Image 1 (tube, rainbow, N blue to C red):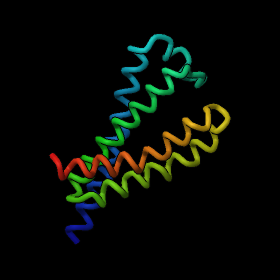
Image 2: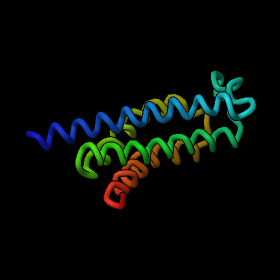
Image 3: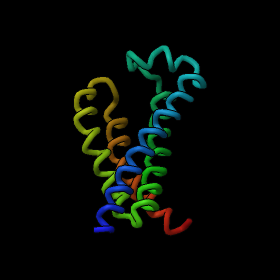
Length: 126
């Protein structure tokens, strides 16, 4: 029972870490990347903006995987976190399919579980 509670806690923490990380880093993009705030609502991003968005997701995915593994006492929590993120964003990106290039969707969606798992693996190293 304790393992299940820790696993669930780790997954929840991982999801919260991802959301907080993306939110804070996106605020940084709004204030630090010229023109970003003006095109964010319309989602008419330039290539550097798309790459910056992928970068903040990557950092957040690594952090969420690490946090999930650390608090969930194992990489399994990081894996579950990454899969949940993927499942949440699949329908979102399906609906946004025409707004972004295919490579952007693929990189974003594949990176969610892969980088969460990689972040979980960092727990052993750290």
